[in-house]
Image 1 (tube, rainbow, N blue to C red):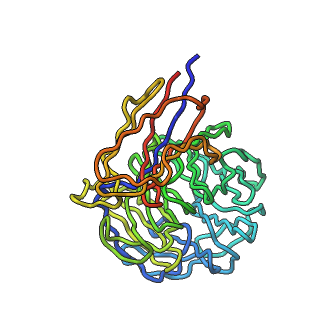
Image 2: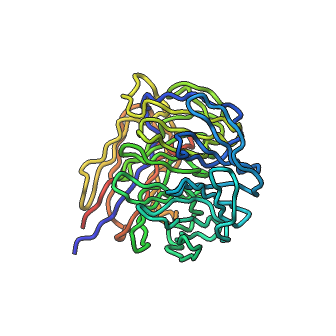
Image 3: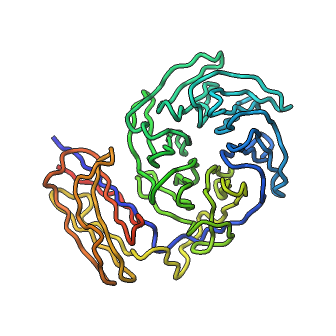
Length: 376
């Protein structure tokens, strides 16, 4: 019988796409999730405060829409225009009506991300502390849909792709999980760098995520090939790749046309707008030392050759881990490699059937990602 081993390589791209970042609403009050309301304006939650804010577009004017919550977190918009808000540490989900009046919809443990089932009034909610997904009917009855497994990393973000496939993003371990209708889980990718993942959003073939701890934005295709596209060190600077800076980016939402992203910075409460998502690579932008990554053959049977170029000398580590993060093989451990092309053969001894993650680290930061497939 054929078995499969999927190895995922993580990298910070040597050439970033020419996306452009602009601050459209400084000091907006929003630090957390973002969604669009029925009128095409933004609604944003302030996890550090008690309010939900409305951001008028295109001008960016911010005002309080509804107040009086513990820790406003994820949101979803019902078919009738009612806003549903997860009060994370308040252990409640609220219904907020267009006139800003509210009522408790349901009480549940640590609600965070919210999204409606497609063509349905059934609400899907993540329980961050409970490591589970719950389905909530319009009459407030709840059913646990999925729990544990890959969801054990604190599920928060939720998004659909263009064909209605649901994805979940874990806050603690940056895993993005593909959900099946029966509640079974498939790991798509673990976000690059380190630390926390804020929220996720889908646009034109990619899932975008906010790397809260490392102040970056990344995207992955639906095959699990992930790249950091924006962000350097902590800050609040507008511009393109290699220039733009974020300060704990958290909430993220795509415009209905899929060509613009809006991001909330947790530390500054600035609303950032990212345009030119389909932009071509910008010439000469090197965010990290690694480039020219290639795996051949791919897919492979017994062995494959990993090769990459270094634009400068760097300390390189390369390891392979299972889906629980346990080290399976250390290929390189902080070894100093000169500028130039480097090749390493990866074989199958010791790798049983299953999914693995291989991470390439340059000067202490995870910098390379690619999906390859081993066949038996």
